[in-house]
Image (cartoon, helix red, strand yellow):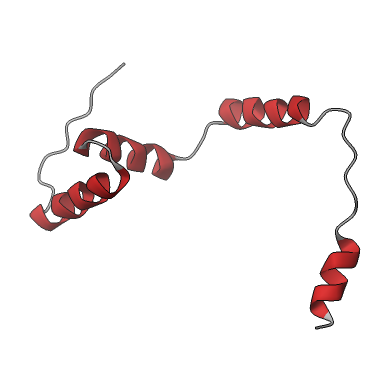
Length: 76
């Protein structure tokens, strides 16, 4: 896996990422990696794999329409 070096980040930016990492129980590197991955977005292949997984997980199940619940909520 390729490495990425970021130079010249503002000290406050690093402190905010460190604080965020502590809140989430991750290392600074793990938190920064996650932020970059989220900002880059998922690839089409990743999205297709996720959708296939959900399709398999819910195969054969029938779900009631939520239309009545939405209308009831709007009428309140």
